[in-house]
Image (cartoon, rainbow, N blue to C red):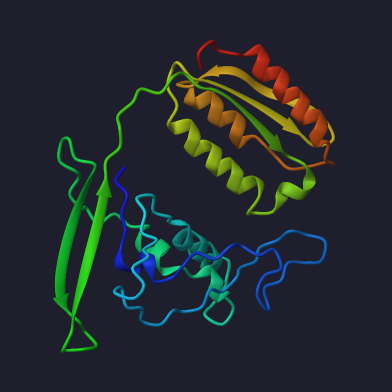
Length: 237
């Protein structure tokens, strides 16, 4: 998959996620919840005076999906923390169909220029950086999924979201891959063991059948998952 970048990648330096959050977005006491630090909007910087660039070939894309989640949950312009809005991650989320690097080249550069809508005396330049990806055959995968199905996982953004994510993983598996699923609540249980990666119907049936209930015994679930991983071990995987 090509990696994309944009001029704004350098406009806002990434800020670390602060568990204390910004004003109005603090997590509840005793919990490491969702919080952001607003880096602020930088002013114009002369490249001649400050030639440092943070442009990299690995482009982050999380902000768009995060904002989409917030909007879908009912957040509006007055309630979204500014620190959650990272423009370069939103731009990099989309595929602009930039040309891939030529054979033997490490990257390709696409340059486009056009009129600036808000300043007739200026022009805008967009630089697209595309890096190649080495084609390698991945070895077989022995995947053991340890899933918390305790009562606290019943919220829409917990077990239901996790089930959707696991279903996406399954779609990319092959016949040589193996999948096991261990659940824990008040009781730990092996609900799937060593299934072939291409047995999609059986794997999805188990995933769709997961329900949240009971207390939480994570230690027992973790121990059982390690045992299953040893029992289903694939040499060289």
